[in-house]
Image (cartoon, rainbow, N blue to C red; front, side, top):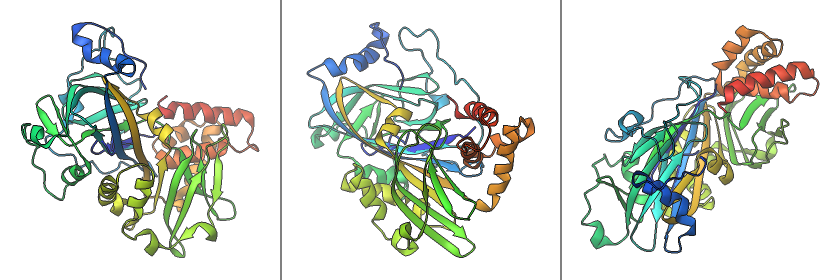
Length: 414
């Protein structure tokens, strides 16, 4: 199973509600008044008008090995530190349907910023459609299940005099992302006795990764989009026998059912590493996607080294806004929400010299080899990509493709 790690930074910018929907929650009991406001906000003409900016990154290693732990401040809250309590009319919290693997894809540092033309109070909910929420700040009022966190009565303060009366934000080293991410906010948030410039959440996703990178029979590098939405600003940095190479593709259209949209990388979309690494490239890209100038600069400061520097082969792309909303739906109570969510995917440690190894395992799965399936389940993006390429190959028998599709369904978490 592929596990995505989603890292969110300050709200207002996004994942930073990192990358990446539950059904409507009902109930009028006193304990659930905040939840009831979530349902009625869109009908309330007096609701607070909020602008939400979010940025975040889904991280995974190509071969299924674990990504490095996320560097959240010590005072952020893990899931174990947040009360697991049922919402009204829900008898018991529901656990994740399947155990999550130790490695895979995670939503990293999603930061969510809020802006309003007046002070006010609102409620907020974050839910992983397929996955689990693992880190949060400020402390939520509750988790209603392992995938969903709710904050009741968030006070947004834009007035300087009122902000001065709030408890001070916690100290963080100036060069830590949790400190400089505050630069992207125009307001303060106060909830459950804690003050911060943004809302943070982070978790893991069990969704399959949209894109795959592989070589064709002629040795050409091909990027395929297997997802239901287009992917944008696709960037590949790859170590080849001829040295380091880089390519950029503005957009790859959504797949047509099980048939991916494929782009063969050639001289026409090659870019020079020096150009990719110029300061301001990521900032300009994320600003065009919806972040403010300051938020875009914060995003680049946080992620530039991972995206365009270093000595690892890395594939990145920006998720379509609809894909972000589908993967991590948000709700605001007593507020009308206008959202700009910018979430990227980051796949590292790509080694196409191992492609034949994963292709052989996928071929074994198609013939019912249980041992091959067990090995492939631990191979992350590379393994899932090998299976998907074989499923989309019309020369493979329908019976074999059906076995592959059945195996793939067990890995998707859906």
